[in-house]
Image (tube, rainbow, N blue to C red):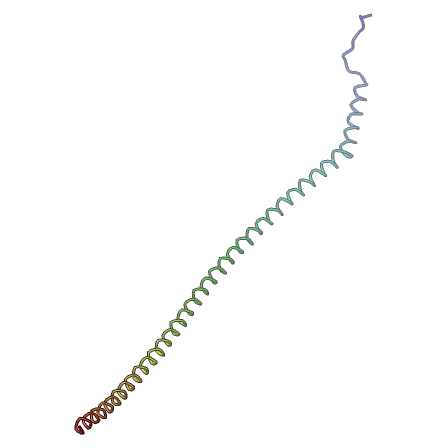
Length: 145
């Protein structure tokens, strides 16, 4: 029973199996592999396009960010320049106001000094008159005695 004969030489069934394999391979190629490869290629193309688009958008965003930073820097510099100019202008105005006030104060002091001097002279003249009158009165009283 164990003595069976094993035949290792190929026969006509090998050709049938080869034909079935090649037919199955052709059917699978046209209906499975080709559409799958096409889908994979489309996804790869989509991925490459998306990466390229993302890189392009990133570059645009970087440019806009640098442009924004440049504009912000320019605006800050301009604001600082205007601030400095405004401070200088206000300081000059304050100095002019102080100078005008000092001049007015000096004029008031000068006019006050002048009026005090005039008043002093008038008071001195009045005192001299009063002194003369009192002296004359004292002399008249002394002489009358």
